[in-house]
Image 1 (cartoon, rainbow, N blue to C red):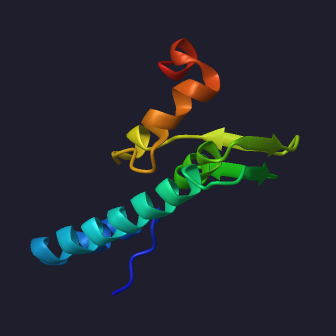
Image 2: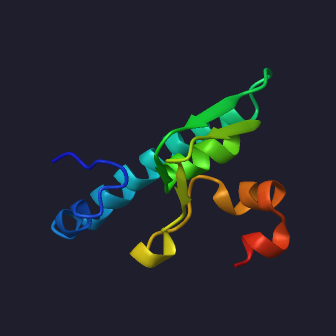
Length: 107
């Protein structure tokens, strides 16, 4: 059984897997996500995200990790974790306020 990160349809499949296996897989995915976003955020050279379409969920988090964001007219940024019953796990809770200000981040 293979779970793709962000695949909401796979949540139903996860309900059929023993609890310990799901938790272990989730923890490994979370650690990999944390290492990737942390490495991008702490990279010693300036980083640029070029967004030319939807940057949703972890894609939005990855863009926020970068020092600069270049967005085309087709770019769309969305964090839909809560609407899907998921935990914002890519760092957006920490990264969004410095980009848009605290008052806009709270909306």
